[in-house]
Length: 339
Ligand SMILES: [Zn+2]
Image (cartoon, rainbow, N blue to C red; front, side, top):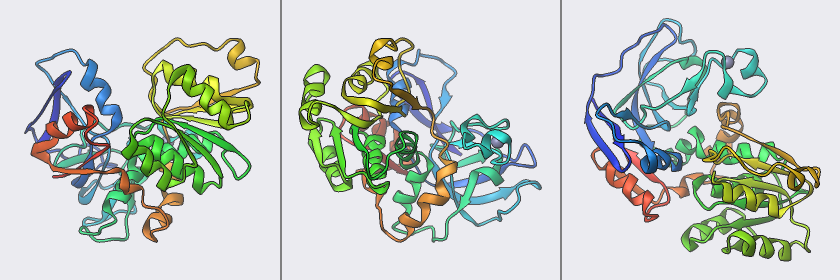
C-alpha cells in the first residue's frame, strides 16, 4: 500500500510499504476513507533530524473495517468507523476513569496517512458511524478522531459552563474547536486570541464574541481591558509554545483554570507566584477523545455543529507532502486527505 513517511524536517514522502495485517486477536485492519494532517505533525516537520529510516505519519482517520481479529467484539467487516487518535481497550481502570490516553493496553497511532491502518484494541477504539462512505458529514465526523475532541477536552478540563468567561489561545483547528466546544457548554463570553483573519472569522462563526489579534504583553493588556481588568475564568491554550503559556497566565482570572491541549514544546515555565498567587488551576493533557465521541457524535449527525469547517483544502494521498507544506506556510488551516 501507499503510506506517508517523514525522513526529517521538511521531508515528507509517500511510498510503498507492506500492507498491515492482523497481528493480535484484538486487532482490526481498516481501509482509510479520510485522514488528515494535524497541527502537531508540524512539530516534527520543523525539528525531526534527517534519517534514512523514516517515520510513518498520521493519527486521524475514519474508514471501513476490512479485517477483524477473533477478539474484536462489536464490529463487523464493512462497518464505517472512526478511531480516536490514541487506541485503548476502553475497559481498564484508567479508561473507566476517563483517561483513555493512559490506557494500560493503549498507545498512539502514527500510521494513519496511508491506504490501510492496523488498529490495535479495535473494540475499544473504533466507533461505528451510521452513515455511508460518501456522506457529506465525513469531514465533521473525522474531527471526532482528534481536533474536536481535543478542543472539547480543553473546555471540559476547565469546567466551562454558562457562568464562565473563556479565553482561547490559538486559531488553529484545535483552538477554533475549543471555541465551538466552549459555546456548546454554554459559555457566553469567548475571547479568541489569534491573528489570521480567515481563521478568527471561522472562530466567530463557532461562537467567539471577541477577537484579540495582539500577542504577548499587548495581547494580555487587550484581554484585561475587555474583562474589566480581571481576565477570564477559563483559558484554553491550544498552541503549545511557552509564550502561549505565559499569555495564559497573563489573562486568567484569580481562581481560574488554565487548560492546555497544545503539546508543550517546553519543559520549563513559571509556576511560582504567578500561578500560586491567584489560586489558579493548571490542567490539560493529551485528550482522551474516545471518552467524548459518543457525546459529540449526535450533534455532528444532526447538523447542530459543523466542526468539519476547519478543513479548507482536500488532497489525495500522493499530494500529502504538499498538504504539509501548505499548513506549514499557513496557506491551509487543516488539510483533508482522501486516499
Ligand atoms: Zn484501558
